[in-house]
Length: 161
Image (cartoon, rainbow, N blue to C red):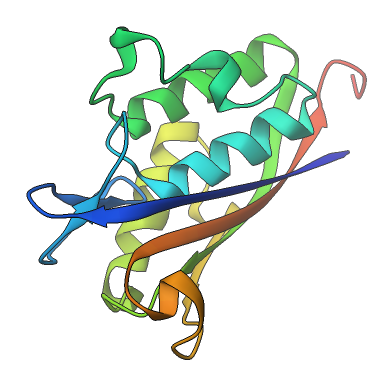
């Protein structure tokens, strides 16, 4: 069993859609970034890559590469899942936290869980997503952006057979 953690943060930006957990969330602003700026999926991908000692998303999907301009983070998550499988790992579980004052995330979490489970070909029961606020403190509390943390555990299926 191996464990990895991930963290990501993005500023709000006018004129962009807000994508979290692969889901479009109705809100007046989106997040600034080279890709779709999905902070939740970025943290999850970093947690999975870290657990497998495969680096981070910057190594695999550098923001200096024009190929990833506007990239769909869900497609990149599928790629990370396939990479883990090729390396002999399977996902045990993922626990992610979104940190934002607005918008409220609770109504969208079940769909996020479904989309992440589908992308990684795992069950919804292996994924937990939650949201919290900072009670008005910090950049999240000032509604300047969103942060996300994730932890993931994986298992080497080659050594268990």
